[in-house]
Image (tube, rainbow, N blue to C red; front, side):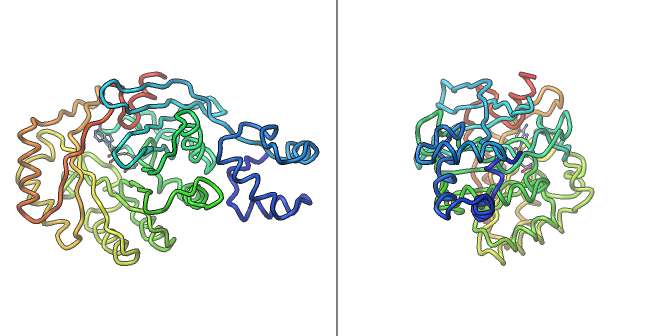
Length: 339
Ligand code: SAH
């Protein structure tokens, strides 16, 4: 049985044609799917006979809300969604002045092994399908009753480790007959799978690429991010420059400040030197404590000094506002707690 949301629009049209359906059927069904119907019965402009026929060969996938938390501090919403096979994933919706922004997961678990990250503790269970990534947006939006306008692929998983499904998802979520979210409103975050960054540059999608850098040199990065054993920091920065050159989009960097590991003024200077010439933006994130890992964030003063040092060297840097801190809203924390 095939999940209709795993088709791209053209594939859906071809599938329906193959089963004797007229051309306009694809448009009808695609738009129903993106509005969050949970079965064929809800597609009211499609005949019972057609629904019965399609039901035998395909299905409409759904996500169950297993838990939902709303931050009392800032309204951030966190969903623990249950997949049809019983696995769980996390999705977070944040309210900004420009609208709702959603952070979606791309895998169940993760095999990248970053030392500070809760998502990777149990390893990778499986990839999410394109439909399962999309469903997080469809069902969060349905639950909230408001349009979601921005997407970050920054939840559980490494999106470039699930490349084909993520690309398919991007095409679908951007499609004018579906949710129609512009590529410029989509950010993909990666720990740095270098060959895939080059592939992504070739896709011609004007999404924003952000790199989880977290270290200014190989010595530090090797100790906190195993991916750095495969792709060294110099290669990563080269790939970013190539991506920016090819797409015309500025790359940004995530840098979690871990006290005593990567947050000295010397580290800030090294970081500025490393990304000089990229005109990149740096998001500084005070590390979220994960019990198992024992990493701590520095004082507000340390964090401010780090930022000021970057700025003084011409690097644009912001300190990320911590949203949803009362509801375990960071990567992998909720899933781990509930399971
Ligand atoms: N695998 C992708 C996307 C998911 S991680 C990536 O690595 O970019 C989302 C972001 O949260 C990454 O920047 C990750 O490094 C960061 N992160 C994970 N655990 C964290 C923690 N405990 N504190 C602060 N940031 C964390």
